[in-house]
Image (cartoon, rainbow, N blue to C red; front, top):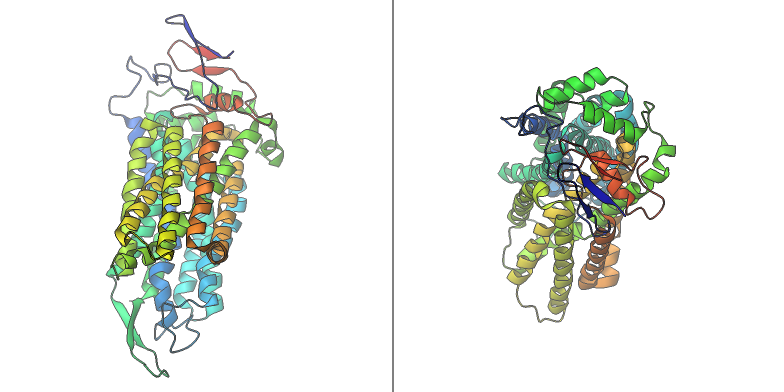
Length: 539
């Protein structure tokens, strides 16, 4: 049996099975910091990593800004007089999509797959800072190209190019934040990645709403009239280009992660960065010891053989499945139906409705940042997926009643919709990105995270591409019941496969994963040191 020996009290207790356990210990850092309290008086081990996380989070902001761009911009791209890119007929209502317009919206997912595919290897080769700087290249190029073009094909290619930069930043930002974060605050800091994604989406919606809206006249029609079609989308594109360029400045300011320096055999630089991040009193020896146990002292870069090794299989299953559940749990469908749901409740301004939804998502994601290192990842994800299951099933019932002309009213549907968004935002939104950067061994984290991110973007494309067919074959209510089933599967997967990782070092997480390993996974060295001042041991 697994035992915890605590030398100061000489007590023993059995840990419950990993499928049910939450590994807990009092986070006392006497062996890492000087002094009795184990914590620096000004909490410099939090504030500096938080500052660098926010700076690096500009990449996450651009992730959200790029995804959200089409909502305010696409109507104007159908009908704007001087840059009428996607309008297939002069008299077509600007709210009607064309095939090229739909491709423009979704092609960013394909570009992101390409960007995420090689970024893990790039980050291992040149470092996290340089990889973040490299992501600015396709982002700036794509936005500038889009702002200058009037050709539909060029607009689509430029958005795919920006998608490459989005895919790169989606790997680098949570990876970097996880590697500069102390264990006690890692959950809150990495969750800022998802918070800044939602802020980016909200930001582009808000800018689009504040910009002057233009009008056009649809000529050649029997009922030709003037319609308001949206903001000048080229301004939004230039703003995207300027913000993307700031990533180069960010990369010059932030320090390289200690994990990268250690992987290159440079302990002195790694120790210097750790003291800069976590305080001058930080003792890096425990980190070095844990890293050597985790990677068996190897300095060579990880390859696909390492990803397929027994100790990596369970983390790969968990990381990839959480990414699949994130995309297939129905969040995109809920966002898609927001406009029709708000109209049913009597709110005709769909732009304002989108702002309401995104403001709820930003606030709820901010709450998740606060809760992540208090409630724990597993508890939050279980709570969130159970709530999403109930909300998705309820939305299915409400759409069925609407189909039968027995709807209880649009405001009831809005309440359920907002409940779903809140549950998604505190759990399934941020936690897959966080857990992905906690559960992989340090020497394989960049490459394995890149693979899991590719699966996320493939899933996002598949969900978007298949949504119309699902809606037609299953109807609205059946589509939401399908997503409810997926959410229920996520509940069961979380309950049986995901151990609690709150406050644990990577070596401790590997030992916890060894207890759930369904396919031979586990740490190379399953001895697990606990930072108690005197060293306890989980064996």
